[in-house]
Figure 1 (cartoon, one colour):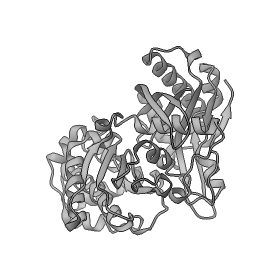
Figure 2 (spheres, one colour):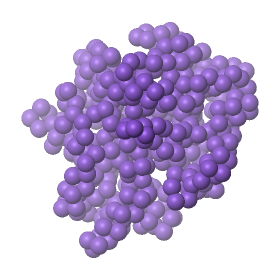
Figure 3 (spheres, rainbow, N blue to C red):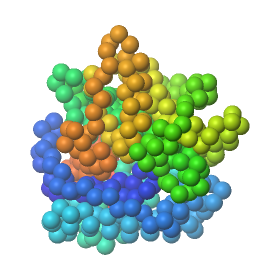
Figure 4 (cartoon, rainbow, N blue to C red):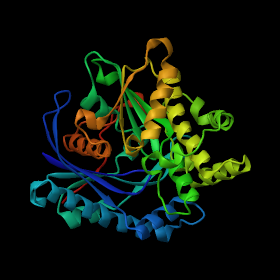
Length: 383
């Protein structure tokens, strides 16, 4: 089958689309990436997404309209990716759309999740059967609805001899640990903030001129406040054992505003705040490996926008070396070095999950999400 995977993550900067040829079934799944595209959101749409993220500005009317606006954006991104692959829409069998998460409550009595980007609009505008709403079935089965890429990470990157960690650094950072030769024993969870707090601080430091710290230049011009960093690493989320997930509800703009004010109160420049928040991402990842992984990885494969930040990557390598101790530092590479562009991995994952749903096979990994059992994910909207 030819499947288009669509992903808009917590950074909400646009839609990543991956066109993937898939054949076979796990554990002998064969895949080939035919095209990967990124369709940036127009500023007005991105502003509306962020307005709907915030309880003080989001409302049911805005969410209702945004659901359809995002459906049109996802459909356009899918069609652009199909053209980039040298195909026509009639040659694509399926679309797997993650949607845009606007709120996520991972546990407790109110446990629930909401992804929008109307699949009926996607199916109507593309003519392609669309699988969507992946996270809700896992939550209905007692899971946290995330991370769902764990099974796909294990399928695509499991190794016969190496302990591997698949580290995605998007708005939120999440890891999948895959032991040698046993994909079903994979473990996955959100390690904490990825680019989210760094992006927020970069916007504040530049008066909105930058949406993110391009090439880590702002962090490189600053210094890490080690005392404040120690306080930030004491956040309760970092001490919680897996399964666990997080998002904007904990590390979003409200927390970013609080940290910006605290940094300024400490007399820090904007660059110093960004440098400290970059170190927070790196060291919280390394601490999560040390505290929660069954074995320290031999190899760490990084994907997501954070893999493009050389300062963050250098800090991550240093933090992992320190956390590993006498066991020896793991080899740190990007998914691109293994044949998968760093921004494409999660879009590819949702193409694979849609393919599994179409064939009636479970897509979640209970060890990662905490669900009671493996379940078939998503809802199918005919093309």
